[in-house]
Image (cartoon, rainbow, N blue to C red; front, side):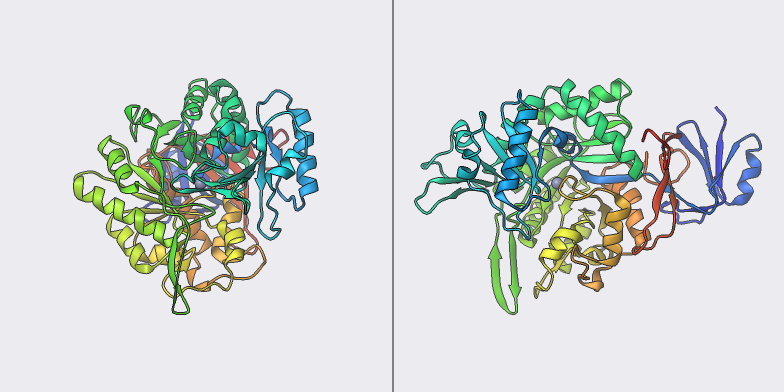
Length: 520
Ligand SMILES: [Zn+2]
């Protein structure tokens, strides 16, 4: 195969060497050479690709993206932007008619932020539909279920709240339909079951994965990958139908729970190839809608949220079975739980490269981040959270912890990897990075300028940082000879107010997306 030489633009190699480069040479699916202009003379027969002043950087790795769930969203009623019970009912009714076969009628993307919209089970009963109805919150940390659905789940007046979850109740103690955190895990699994045939799920994943190429995403980490979704990814890769690389983070189909014991006997972290590889096991320290927070506000203590049980035992179990771990921790008390568990596992297994991951780290103190850095840990963060969460916490300044403390993470020495947490927020890296670089929230206000991270540093976190989080630094995430030739060409400047756009996406040395081309 003839080599290609990319030149005439601004190259961001994102390599640890930090040397500037003008030329990138690609041969087959690999990067062959990177260097200054003189390097071109060594490749007189190469095809020259003129960057025409544009930016060349590694392909984006979204280090926390629920692709297998996102892929099913088109099969559920779209409740994003719905603000009234009437509109919610109309969407669900329309959807039920369009999907007459599925055993559950499921809506996705419900939000109470700004609207206060929380349906009651009776609102869903009143639709008179012929199957159980489930309305999933955009966070995937709670849902509302109708009476038929509660019956099917075996949830009634005498049901106890599970550890790490809450069953919403009326004043007389009867369930009101709301299932929060671990109380909704089983409802999620049951309403997902019709798609759990790996063939069927794979068709949806293939379509969703193709869409990511136009946003420059060439790899994702599926941050809670159910066993049938893992099988679907392998099937797609074998058939040559998976357009991006996927690191699967195994988790039971019933979300937010402890590790799947059967899966711990399966392929451990690192197994696989460049298309599908096993990543860390995903565990949870605290809630998503009920993050565990323990802070002081104007000198007064404030403790709220839900700390999940058994984390230290689960981290130890997973580490002893040859897996790395990634722990969801949104609140600072959740983060303390994760750090305690990491430190205990590091003491018991001092010889392992644990590369502990904290997912989110939305509220943290500098001393907590120093502990993460001492462990050699990684914070996998979501700059796009500035949009929703940033807006919700405007003006809430705690004495002892900061919201979305991105600059503190970088100063701590812990590695920062970037991600979207799609479908909980929008996924486009160039858009989330602009929130992270401007600290602008959904209202247009600016949240804590002391935590600004530059646009270029966000691109590092989306490439080299994310590759490190996945243990993939020897295969992707930088423009370095020998690594996979996944890269993007960007049009425009790294300006958060006027972010650049993706002009081209290349995977394994092949042009797979070009802006303006029809068919994409
Ligand atoms: Zn997530």
